[in-house]
Length: 464
Length: 139
Image: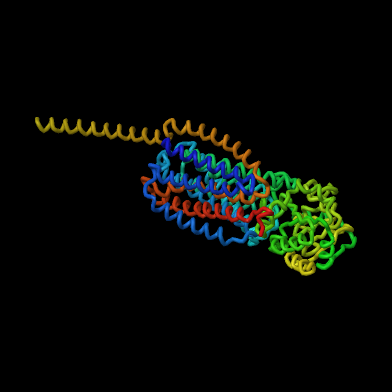
């Protein structure tokens, strides 16, 4: 479908708006304008499409936009900030499903897109359609599984089974063969078979991946939804969709890369899954029978009050316990006492990129007190107290010292260099990686056993 | 005599119409084939599309690397919202000049799904960003 010059121009403007939207995210102040650019770009894109010659009767789409839009608006208003990762997964699944539907619609009504007639669709359009539908379907079921894991509907533990990689390879091979068959025959049964196989592949790809690898997976699905959009852009011969698809695809890929680097793992090893399952037995007895110092909220309050600088290290446990507000209150009390309080964020803390930053922002922590790993790691040596709350593996010194540890080589926050480490944790169990944390047994570590939120509240009481 | 002429004429006419029909079918075939290949436009679009795609990947690469890590969650929100620009394809499917009910239905469903994402994605991003405050801005 050749676009008329005006529509092409408007689509280009819209694409530029989207680039500006991403560009704005380089800082919190410019980001707000960025979102406006994004909204404007989307409005231009939709309006231009309504004005296209090949679009007749705007009633149905407008009803669709109103229905979908109000659902989306309600969700965005109601959802808890701690539930962001699963919300993102759910949103990705919708993009995936929409991509499947659009490919199917183009397959059944190619005339509307100007890519041939039913039964004589151009070869490259068939390939693009098939690929778009397949990527969309994988994104859909993959995101649904990720959502289930993040929401706790299915076990966050990696589920592995014999011959799993073989099965995935076979499904992938089948997908390729079916794509060839589609080009040769153009039968709709083959098209549906492609979708069906891709749906299964989405499930089998994500099921073996453990809960804490989810930052990578959520980013990866983000990337997939972009590639699916680009695929549809090729089918529709629409440059805007290709531009946006490439932007989103690149963004998701970069986030996946950053997350992988944060765990010192290759993307492939995350994809192959199964991490954390069998490692538990391998490195169980690091501490041997060394004593663990367990303290109370009063002890912690005493130590914190007498410190001059404190660095708080939040992790997924803080999100689970919804402890961010109590934590901020505790920090406020400390600041009132003249203690310098800062926060240290590990790239993979939480269940999605930037998860901790959003939660702390929600609790009104000013963002200039929240620092990234590379900016703050050197300061631990000059810090009186490192307050670890709901994090574990990202503080585990074994990553630096024990080559046998499954997390060896992962960049960690050097909390052990602080004069005192206060470690809030529900029990002395291992973290997600199933690795014992030698930090627990250090002389300068005091364990504060209990729920993160309750512990923070108790410390506030003891401080006052 | 005249009846024989008439029969001949009729036969002639029948043969010509058969020829005409044959011509018509070949013509229709050619047209559909040409439509299928999209003439030359599709071939050139493919190359142009790939060019756009590769360049946009680079733009995305450089723009996203500049995003501060603290805003990675809003980044996901906003990319999620803009990837729903596939709604363009959904609208075309839902409101075609010549409809086919199954395609129209699929298009309609896709419009709904994409709209959930567009509104949900942008609004949740705005909500996230509204929470990021500087130290001075407090109280």
